[in-house]
Length: 331
Image 1 (tube, rainbow, N blue to C red):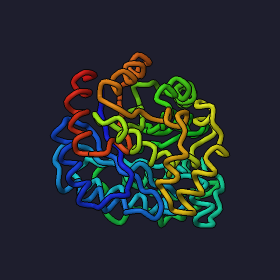
Image 2 (tube, one colour; image 1 turned 135 degrees about the vertical axis):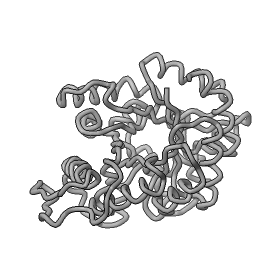
Image 3 (spheres, rainbow, N blue to C red; image 1 turned 120 degrees about the vertical axis):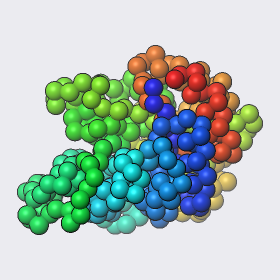
Image 4 (tube, rainbow, N blue to C red; image 1 turned 90 degrees about the horizontal axis):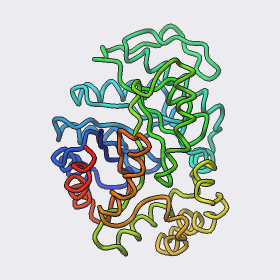
């Protein structure tokens, strides 16, 4: 069983250094940081984390090939892998259409093809091969190669929420970061991934499939729930229809929350609009409550438990609690 932590990129850089060290000491295998728009840079955060740790793997969850050119993603990947001594994992996907289209005014065209072609190109570049290609989206000349030696082909993990992207985890990736909202959504996403595995002639043993959940761990139930509600208020409207259907929700249910959070910038008001049904997106409470829900995932065959934001009102305490009460139970 593997264990990993995932963070949003909304905190001071030095905090991640503390969390990475705490995670390494607590027995976690991987440390992931998102690269959401208009927040702090994940490559910079992970550089600091790499220099502050020795064993734990680091990764992006996720970079996208719309706001970052695939050539630059390959540059980041090989450079961070060099800096970390071969501990970097590249998490990529298409990103959220709502943020890319509405916030930036960019065309969100051919998201799956763009990701598939980006994976093929980066695999070649980090293998020190020429990445010339004539794809639907990427049309590169024979000048497409890294001008420095990549130490290895950097492992690629795909983030996914939609059925087609979930299938590509099985078909082309070294690992997967499917968001499980609620955690039991694993049973829904697995058949899509297995279709990709069958298409590529691969098996489950060929990929590292992380069961990515959201949790807020604390002995203070009220504080744990408030912290999770803040995260749901910020991201809920951008979740895929597949996920929302598992919860009996639609994007329209989040419109008033989205407006309060992103337009009026009133997070306290947005938090109050988060309903009990929406709270099922994650797990809030004690490590005992967390373990109870995780048992169901492990019974479904999960071999990598990934704990995602907000983690808790006191993040170092939450990391230590999971390391103390959860990791030994499922190791």
